[in-house]
Image (cartoon, rainbow, N blue to C red):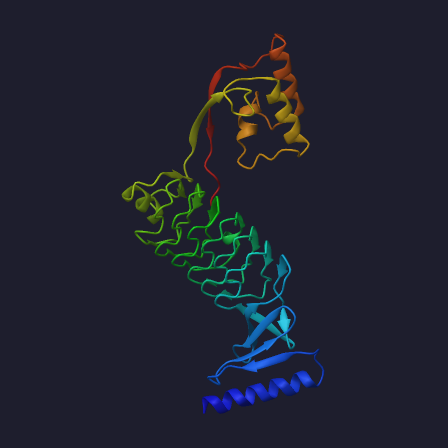
Length: 316
């Protein structure tokens, strides 16, 4: 019966393509249970009456955008091993119709640097980004995944990552041997973390909430953590914009570069150190540092050690 059903689907799809689609080829697996259609860049499999799965990428482009549809129906799934051992693709846009990504879909993609994911994604398979040593740009917190699967980011190049509020668990070896990973933000929704989730990732710092499961896990396993719902005190040299411990003309230049968007200040620490009067960063702060270096009197204690409180981020 299953073979008959598969044959009927294949025939109907073939007739559909023959009446108006561009030239396509298709093949039926030896089992008679899998129908694969191919175009220039992709191999497609019909997964249900509503949509298609991208079975394999067979194109040659380095920047790839997944197709929205095939045969006038949405592509909803990226299959297992779809980009397996691809060494040329550098960036991928998954599109907002993709709902799930299969096991080891990007396994060994050693040239992959960035991938765009959407909130339509609810499931990312086991070992999905295993061995992607150059991957640093990924927005997992924009997805709706419920788990970080086993080996998902093993031996990956990510440096920091935030998990979405839909996530409830982190699997075995999920971040195995991620030596570059220094910041992982874990929401309160996570209530299960495998004992070996961070094996070999000795530089990771977990950012979490007080008394959350992640907080308890970090303490129990001797992993450094930061409680992101608490205000902290930070001691520094006032006016030391670049954080090297002394105030020089370079600090005035850093302020100017930040103000004209030639330098980023993602964590706000440059502004904290360079705002000598505590106001929002502005060109006056650079001027006051220059006056201080020229031995002109300034009302602020530039060049001395001060302590300021960094408020906890707003939750919600």
